[in-house]
Length: 78
Image 1: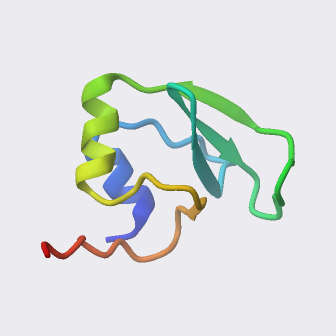
Image 2: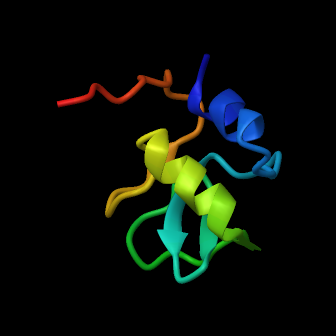
């Protein structure tokens, strides 16, 4: 399973043209593959509290952006 499939499993829409995302204030910021810091977003998608909590539980929220084609790795309990 890749990150795109995990996001879809969490009922989060993944735009076809978007290859990367990062969290924003109450939304996910979808970016093209070649995006760098400060690049314009392709799409801003609002997320519900439940979706955000699902992203946190899945380990898919943080300061860095993610490429949606990377393999999804389940977070390990410490």
